[in-house]
Length: 172
Image (cartoon, rainbow, N blue to C red; front, side, top):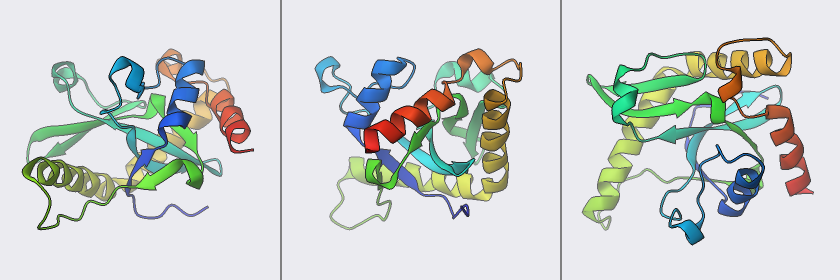
């Protein structure tokens, strides 16, 4: 598969809940616990012929002091931390489980929607400026994990093979 320019995608809530039941490190989006307003958003990167969604998160105070690593990247725009990518929590997806987010600002958008779209545009611009590095990071992490290599971030990673099996099962 060829890696196309990156877009931001929302992942199906039922699929995320299903994966969360297997590994609770996957961000919950359950309405039962008040998390339905926190959609699972990410960029899609090809790893070993599988589409993987690398989750994007809002920056937290702790992220400011963290350095980029094989499982984590900071998105910086004009010197400000605007978001982070968690490669260790990337999940396999199929087209049926993802929906591209429309980032085009429209005149009928309210102020809150406009601000969210402006942030997504900045994050997406940063991701596409660093597409080679992001694709390489995801694939190196994936290969190290799959081959059983011992590395510092291994314990923080999801079990990618188990997630792929669950993805296949979910789609059949």
